[in-house]
Length: 254
Ligand code: 13P
Image (cartoon, rainbow, N blue to C red; front, side, top):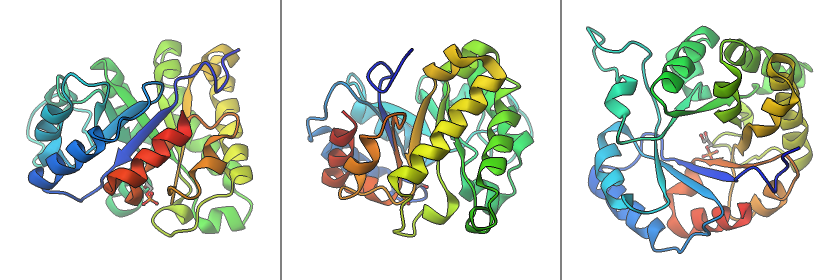
């Protein structure tokens, strides 16, 4: 049965709506200069306008590129949207279902499911973000919410697609707040997520899925979170905009 030791850790930098192409190039070069451990998959997710320039910086290295957003249709009259085929050859990963997109842009579980399927069809890897709000946690609904978010996507995937997916557990109350989930809270939610995948596809598939923690991960709290069994890496926002802080987090996942 795969454990933390057999699932390759994955640490992704979600730069969100930060960095111009020039700034992104500089930041990617600074991150490359950090001599990151080869045992951790590192993914940089710049904004769409910097995808190609940052991809050029990391070309030929072990660092992968991820997009922050995609639409499930292949082409057509969808002003402002990007299709999976437009990402092919540039990005290998796509973040989908981020709470900022659910909350601020009305993305539904159904949207997340359609996007995740399109991402897999294109041969890319989704990073499916799930997580409860503070009200949901305080009212005891964390497990219910996460189960709904995960199963609505994973029931629609083939076992192979499910097993090769990445999931990010990102409690909404921990994102950008400086208040990270405790290692116990993160481990509990991630265990629940893995069990949810197992209900849909069996424990062999669930054991292959890499599940990250995200939400106020810093160079200070990363060791306590990432040494926990079952936590396979991190999805990092703010701290990923600083190359040395980000490198510390990658090292902690090794
Ligand atoms: P912060 O690390 O800034 O809290 O953001 C987390 C996040 O949303 C990553 O996708």
